[in-house]
Image (cartoon, rainbow, N blue to C red; front, top):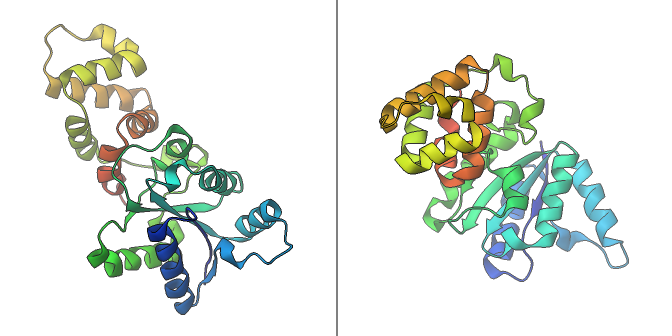
Length: 235
């Protein structure tokens, strides 16, 4: 049984409806769930929120157009990260890049898609799998603290991701900003396909694949999320 804290935007009908749905469904599956409507009259709000996040295994954050700019939601994600909790982002009702404050924590984490109500049952099953087997199914937020030297990536997936994420000019700008030594060595007129091959080879040679993926996640979060679950090779 897992203990989960649900972070959502108050006074948003869809967010509140989903938060209540999650609470009832997950409680019915024997998980311990907290949403802040449970805070009793007279309790100190910030202290209670901090204590509940600290006591939880997971933070489930509902991402909508309203919640991604909510100071309360951002603070709850920040707390969960500082306490090294596993964060499960749930996409509710938006399809855009995250603001920097949230993107720094969430762009490299696999999301669960609840944007279509007819998919809620299958999406909830994905969430249950994550709650039941966190080590196998969730990318923890503190990526830099993991032993990246033991991780293997499928470079064919990275190649497809880069090809979809960047046009030729954007790719060269990306190299100029983040991989200048490689940029300076490239021949004028080099094709996009060959540039991607050289970038991946350079990142492997310099042990910079983690950095490459971090840069892509920040620069092109939607494309990164599309490929995130396919990047690592299971050992």
